[in-house]
Length: 106
Ligand SMILES: [Zn+2]
Image (cartoon, rainbow, N blue to C red):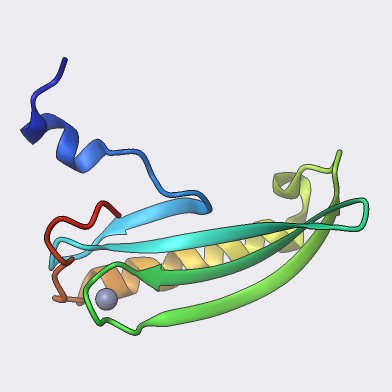
């Protein structure tokens, strides 16, 4: 069993988080892919969010729809939107000083 100090930064990511950037304030700027059932597959809504308390930074990406047997990562459009959101998250992480609220496991 690892001690707490070792596990704090490696706690499991919340559902939908596909990339995280540690902000200078100690929160995270996340790239999110929220999925929801849609007809024969799933809708994927890409966006970003910051876990710094009251930080309202967000970027909305694009919605994609894939059949259940399709791999989103095999789709150029999906990958390029993810890459763009990664750049935004990286840029935000470099300057955001909002602290995460203590005790909230994000
Ligand atoms: Zn922020």
